[in-house]
Length: 377
Image (tube, rainbow, N blue to C red; front, side, top):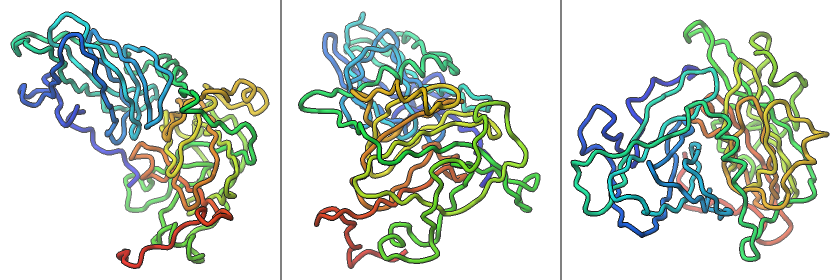
């Protein structure tokens, strides 16, 4: 723990790296299509540590769904998808019959090393021989922040009578969490330190007893329900890099949330060691992404520009490098629910916390007891 993983050999599409990787054609995913037909592609980013661009040469996508929620359809030459996110797109086989590369490669606009390998597959029109060379796909530049921001701004909830966007208009509790990195003394580690990742300068420590078990049975000593609603000390979050005297702590601290209360959470990236993009995932809930921007969040100015009509509803949202993202949700699902960065490396370093949502008054608004045949850990 505390060191980045080795670079992988390849990214893959359906488990195959493609012919641009030094291997044979049999290691390439190919999808056959017929001219004039429209295809629904269900795209999942199963990579552990990389946000990915994805495109098909010569073909546009119509985005219709993210994270199992319908969107207002829009057309794009490429998509951006973070680990844990899903995107459904429509593709029309309306080009000259041939072979067209599909490609995926990482998006990274932070000053850190990236696993910059391109995976390719082939979209092949029926009747076209394999001997025809595929047309190359054009992807955004690997550090194209402008594309990333504009793409995410195009994502809007369908908000139709059948599929309304039930955005909380009133907020019962406001949370402000800073995202950063820290260092911890580690005599057995390289250079005597290890990296930590933090929310409000707290790196989460996984307990030996399950959090839900401790919550349900009111077990003492497993966690503290005192995670701060805001950072202990305000600072210039996205200013010059801060590398010394960070005061990072390691603890198992949760936030207790009242049942059915409405929550607004602003996630603020910081320059504690370095800025970086972070896809954050909340278990047990969908949420609405009501705002996002670059720089330090301004609690007086920026909420006036929130989209409270048709913001995208999803369960994993990106916090841009050196920026912020605001989400809202209604806490109507009792239990203990993790919220964590979906970059596996970061969540392993402690970039997570959990919400302990209290039971409601109704018969179906309480955590169920564990089944009698639940095997012990």
